[in-house]
Image (tube, rainbow, N blue to C red; front, top):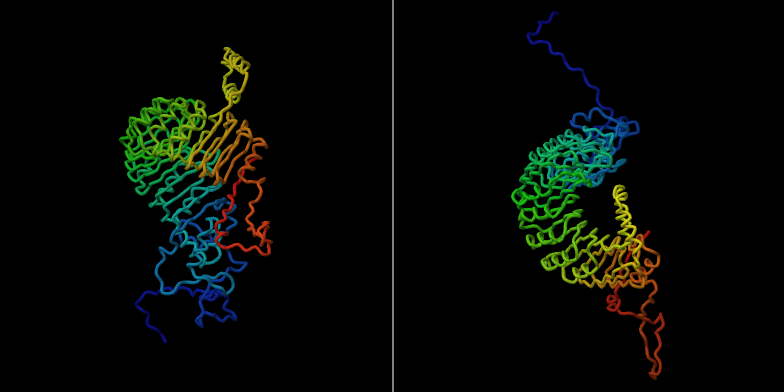
Length: 582
């Protein structure tokens, strides 16, 4: 019997697909299997069998998970050679609401709610997260939730890693707001563009460079990055040797740190809300940066500055006068480090323009005790931290005057300032060039050294009620020290080689750390004797009882002794102090 041909075109029926050999509810083999989920038991995702092929955890596209990649291969390629931390504030913040929470297998037939699994996984590093995502489908979904909800990431990029690895990690956590990269390879514009494209809501970006690595970012690329990130508030960059000039305009930027600057031809900062600025230049004498011109315009372009830190060998009185003319009214912290040409004239300009400083750091300057007296006369009610390390022209009298006139002082650092004349002579002798040696200046130093008949040492006596940290590292010119500071908890006596043990007196009840590296054994023993009470006898708290005739007083035996709870609470435990030494 003939059939009439149909008018509809013939449609090729798709071939029938072979079903899975595993149960779709629990994942176990179907043969001889009774699924517990059919009886109302919660379904779980078991751990993969030994022959299961691991899946790749991180990629640009979610569809690429269908092409698995063993974790061992990723380790060989250096893709997960990182040590990092993922911080999640609210791991369930972006999860869609469901009637019943999913459960994830954790071995055998045991299950765990997905939210609990996310809480466990979010404490792992990215390397461990990538391995966890390769366990099974349920774990991979939990790892995706961790990546989506991450707010802070600290990532170390190994030399073998490529830009694709950084992009794959950042693609998974598009909601990231704080990123820290530790680069062990060169950093270029491609990696910076990958960060800018992957993280649209980035608020804080910190770049740390390892040794023997180069930061190839220029001033234009850094300025474009800061201008395009409208939410960026913190920017910290290391290795800025190749920048050349700085031109940053951002209304959201609050903190800017630039390290390893060298030969900056021009600096324009148009950041009206900038609160903290740190410029750290390289320790090279041939640096041609004009700091006076650079600092003069900060008052107009950054009027809200509160903290300024500048470390450069080019700092001088002219640069400080230019900063004073900027008239930054809300300045609270001023740190001008390594400026050997800064003298008392610069201190006069500082105290005349800024009267509300809470921290003043003039380490490496050439100020004298006169400059310290000017500081104490202007900041008696505001200054809490004073750092005068590597200032060879100050004496113990100036430090004592500062401790007496600044009642709110909590930190004093005068390391390598009060030095022995022999150590100063040796350092000056090493700094003499061969040309000066031939001209006769070396012979002058030799004559001065032979004319010294005696050493001149100094004594330091400090009595302060709020001082918490005192640093006297490298003060080889001290032979006597007396401290009466009940709130002091940290004392640095490293390399105080001429301090006599019998001239040491420490009356500091809350002292916790004493650093005595490079000191002789007798001084370390004296410190231990005073702060640890090793040779003091224990106080006798046993009660006494008088006989009936009142003629003799005896101690109550231990088995009869009964102390009240009030007396036990009134006992004060001795403060545990640690003495750090070689």
